[in-house]
Image (cartoon, rainbow, N blue to C red; front, side):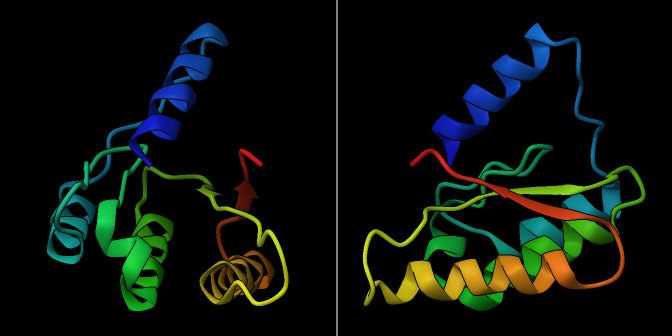
Length: 112
C-alpha cells in the first residue's frame, strides 16, 4: 500500500538503506500489470489491481523476482483475522508458496 511504502522508505532512509531502481524491462512489465492507485517503483505499490486479482499479485511478485537489481522481495500482507477470510488466506498461501520456491528470497511483513 502507499502508506506502508512511505513507512518503509522512511525507515530505510533512517538506517542508511536504499532501494535500487527497477530495470526498464521490469518497470514496463509492472505498468502492464497494475492500474488504478499503483505506483510503479521500488518499493512497488500495486494499488487496487493486486488487491483484487490473484493473477496480478503473482505477476508482480514474479516481475520483482526477475529484476536483476532486486536481491529479495518483501511483501506486505494482512494476516487473516479469523478463519473464513478467503482473500487473506489465499494471499498468505501465495506468500508461503513463493517463500518456499527456489530463487530470490521472498519474505512477508504485516502491520497487524
